[in-house]
Picture 1 (cartoon, rainbow, N blue to C red):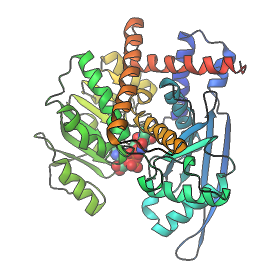
Picture 2 (cartoon, rainbow, N blue to C red):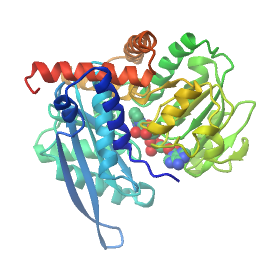
Picture 3 (cartoon, protein in one colour):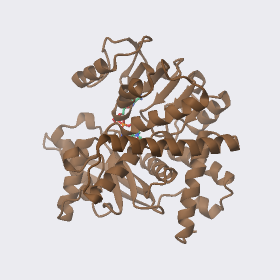
Length: 415
Ligand code: NAD
C-alpha cells in the first residue's frame, strides 16, 4: 500500500489553483499553513483503575471569513497532519458556500469501540477541558466526525458550559434536539450530497431512476446515503461496506434490514442480505455511482485503475489521492469533490448556530429547502466554472473557494 499524506494532497490542490488564479507566493504561503494549533495530552482513569494518556489536537486553519468551525474525530489512526488537512478542507468548504465561518478540526488518537461508555464520557469531557479556552461560540465551534456522535457532542457542550459557568449551546453543533440541535442535522451531509448528485446527473446525462450505487462506509454519512438513495433519486444501492467488509446484492439491498442488522450486531457483516465482498471489490464495481463515505485515501494509485463507476461522489473527506484524481480525470470519470459534495453537514450546522443565536427552531421542511437551495446554487456555479474553463469540478471548486478566501484576507489587510 502506498502511504499518502492528506495534507500534502490538499496543498497540491491549493498550488494548482494558485497557478490558475495567479496568486502571489505570499498568499499561497498563507493558504498552505494553519493559523494555530493546540496539542494536548489527556490522562484518563480507565475502568480497571489504570491511567492512560491520550493525545489530542485542535487546529484552527484560517479565520479570515469568520469563527472557525469543524468536527472532532476519535480514531486510532488520527495524526496531526490528518487534522491539519481536514481543517484546511473545512476552510475551503465554508468559503466555497460563502458561510460566515473559517475552518478547523479536532482529533483524539483513540479507539472509541474499545472504550466503555464511562471511559468515552471521561475522555470527551477531559478533551474539552483542555481546549476550552481555545474554542467558543464566537471563536471556534465543533461538531461530530468519524467516531463521535450526538452523545459525545452533548458531553462536550455540557463540559464547556461548566468550565465557562453558563450554558453555552453555541460552542458545538450536531447536538440532540432537546439541547439546541437542529432538525435535519443527522442526515444533512448525505442529503446534501444527493441534492448535488441530482443536479450533476442531469448535467452529465446519467438517469438516476434505477441507477446502481455502491457506498463505502456505513456510518453517519454512508448509512444515511444508503437510506436516502431511493427516496431522493429512485436509484438502487447494490453494495455497501464498513471497516469489516462489504455486501453485494445486484437486485438492490434491503437497507432497512441492513440497518437493523448493524444496530443488533454493530456491523454489516453476516447480514445474509447479499454476497460478501471486500472493500477493494466494492470500489471496483461496475456501478453508475460510487460513493466513498469512509476514511481518506480510499482510492489511490493502488486501485484507481480498477474503478469503473460512471460518477464518483465524495461524501467522505479526501477519499481520492492527488495522483489517483489525475488518473480518474484522464479516464474521464467525473468526480464531485468533497468540499462541494459533503458540505450539507456544515451548512445545517450553520443553520443550528443561527437558530441557537436567535433562540429559534426551524421545521424540517425549512431546513431541507434551505439546504437544497445552498447546495444547488453552489453546484451550478462550480459546474459552469468547470465547463467554461475546461477544468475538473475539484479544480473549479477549489478556485472558487480560494477567491472567496483571498477576498476576505485582502479586505482585512492580511495580504
Ligand atoms: P462514522 O464514524 O460515523 O462512520 C465511518 C464509517 O466508515 C464506518 O461505517 C466505518 O466502519 C467505515 N470505515 C472505516 N474504515 C473503513 C474502510 N477501510 N473501508 C470501509 N469502511 C470503513 O463517520 P462519518 O461521520 O460517517 O464520516 C465518514 C466520512 O465523512 C469522513 O471522511 C468524514 O470526515 C466525512 N464527513 C462527515 C460529516 C458528518 O456530518 N459526519 C460531514 C462531512 C464529511
